[in-house]
Image 1 (cartoon, one colour):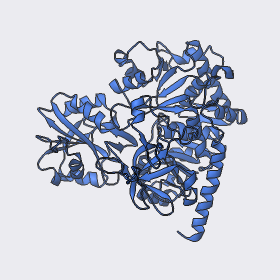
Image 2 (cartoon, one colour):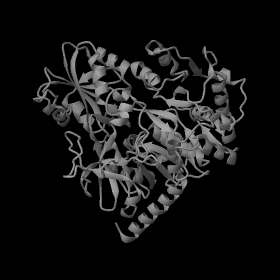
Image 3 (cartoon, one colour):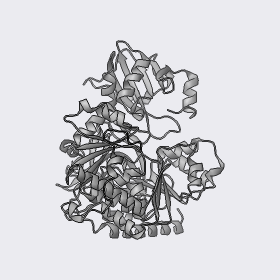
Image 4 (cartoon, one colour):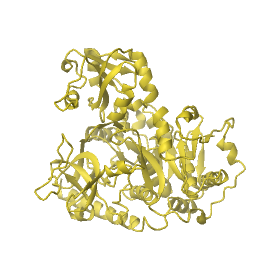
Length: 597
């Protein structure tokens, strides 16, 4: 890096860090604080500006506020109280944020549930947050109604549909309610450390975990993007990511709306229509995950790739090779990559578009930012310790797990954890650099260079990331083993050339199997991204002397025909709703990026 570029980078980080510190220092977990405050300030400042739009509807900031106020009035009308939880089970639409914004106005928490879930996973999410009601859309209400027998008690299901034909039709209920901003006394007891939202993550084992998103954490996540991404009221931010995720629904949507920008929402991402839609919608920015940009670059170049008005994008997970191609083809150079998780206290930001870096902590700011890389035994995942029993910091160029110091009196470094105390405790590492200190374990392996730039290496432990989702091997194994005829299942992620993350692969032993019936069974219990892409069928599993399956060996062998020793090897066929046998021609197509899953 040239001297001028080094100086420019240092000044960028110093200036932005100063602004962020100023914006976040007033947040207090123990004092009154509510996620609605920044929204209401934007509404009062930009009442007539466009706030949100989707394919069928748009709201000005004033209309957005009116809609949220009606949702708040509905909550009071049905008897919801401060501290209660409502589950939101809908696809992307303009009312998505307006709903949870309205709930927060009267102190009601909202659980943002993945609209791809069904069956036991869906029921689990509802039960673990003790939801008093569920809000569905016309496209999700059938799945919601199908799991009522799995719940511990009766729960009303309201449908937000323009048809007005549902039994508990929320749209009809809103018609007679007044859109007045609730008085602040309705939420007077809410403190910054109280939960505002629940966002679900697969975690490392078991069913999805409910991550407690406090008011101060949500505000922090929204404000933290305004300065690095230079968002203003002149921007139009394109959002095609799911709004039940922190990246799209809190960071992306929230940062746009508190800065006075317009949020342009699409129900689903479409690589074929993306650039044409973005150009016609005159968007100036968009929110991404790495998978999204890879899909765009896998498509043939089109004229709209450079006809757009997009000057910046922000998100996470963009690989260096995709990054370089993306700049060349689109002309977009202002790419703000970040690293973080819904539940974690570690957040990194690449503010100067260093290709491939997920963030930077300049050496002169290291003492101000409490994140470190520690050495870990990659087989046991146990942190390495010195003669004093303390963790060992990884040197530049060495791979280590990134951890964040937990401090109750610092909203930026506090770890709220999950709804389950046991799951929260499992993520806390003690006696790291001092006896008695506590750090959050990210579960991610990173490396850092001399300049302080961080680079993502891999996920640690028994998870893998596919289609921008963290997938629990244990949960998939459990679902597979419930299928008749399956004796054992080992699930892991394998790399596919040109793809982000790792595709799911299951090695199973069976007494009998019908591949079409197997597909049908797992399709009922697992969302599409968690279903194994590859299936390996063998006579018996290999294990160690302590009866542990040799998963690492299977990972190395992957789906290559020359490595499977005559075992049956199959790949998913979504179109045919089954698994088809792999052959050299199909493997060649997969490795060339000619197949999508």
